[in-house]
Image (cartoon, rainbow over all chains, first blue to last red):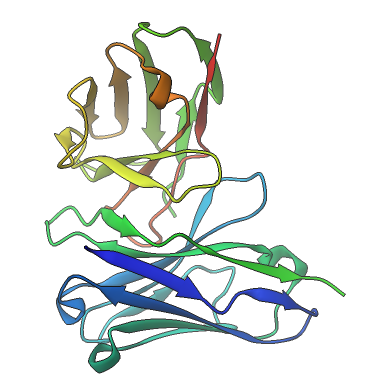
Length: 120
Length: 107
């Protein structure tokens, strides 16, 4: 079964750090680009970051640029999001999502999400 | 950044109704438009990509149309399991922006 499973969420104080992980299974992880997408409580979806299959291309949303770092370990079938200098507005469910192999680059497989709460 | 605007933000409909949701991009995105369904407390699910291509396993009552800046998601006959939120997303460039969502509720 094709699957993505996030972990690493939790409660952190403003200014703190957290590292999210996304474990992939059921497909050849190294063939696919990946993303992080977040959703604040009661709000819509916000794209956070993208990494290409070989880590050559990396992009961030302006809201997290300079604070978050996306990475991957293809040998471990894992995607990561290092989050530093966290703010209350970073509170959200964080999803990892796979980019389709097709040209139009939709997000075809999503994890179940991990909740990050930034609060004192 | 490309802004994606969905309408309506919410709608009430009955089982069996035909429902349409529109999505407008702030600039042309050709056919780089995707639709997702999200049920409460669950991850989003890809329904349609490339504006009109049905993702594998998605019921044929869902369809998408449009190109350029104006797009439509149509559910031909609303089923109980279709009550959810729907999001459009452009994959023309980065950042991959989403619409604000449309919540489909039971009338």
